[in-house]
Image 1 (cartoon, one colour):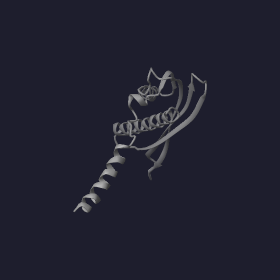
Image 2 (cartoon, rainbow, N blue to C red):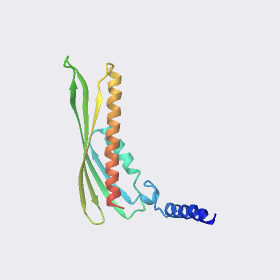
Image 3 (cartoon, rainbow, N blue to C red):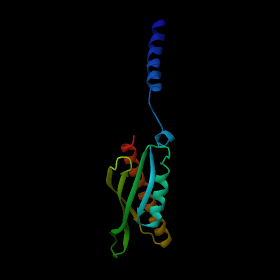
Length: 158
């Protein structure tokens, strides 16, 4: 009977030790906000620029020692992806490109990256549905670009 208890208890203790020793941390906690965006300049479409600026500034912490300036140049493009037999457009390809330049104020080091995201959306019979599809595709592109920029900031400043 003691052998059975030992066989059951030892693996349980090992598993509980490894689970509690994990160094899991939230990515969006206050401790993870290791940058302060002192200046933010963005060129491009007004709506996309506003959304990107607001979402990235949420990860800025005034108490951080890493003070940076961010310059973003947005380029949005729309191309025809697919046409039907009557030569009517059935799908568009929407692309969003962000040329990002990050300047560290402490060291004057510059980091330049280009982020590109593409999304296809359908043309519907109703114009309002097509506009809604365009907005949804645009929001998806914005979220992808923001995620990529924030991932790069986390990599550089972690």
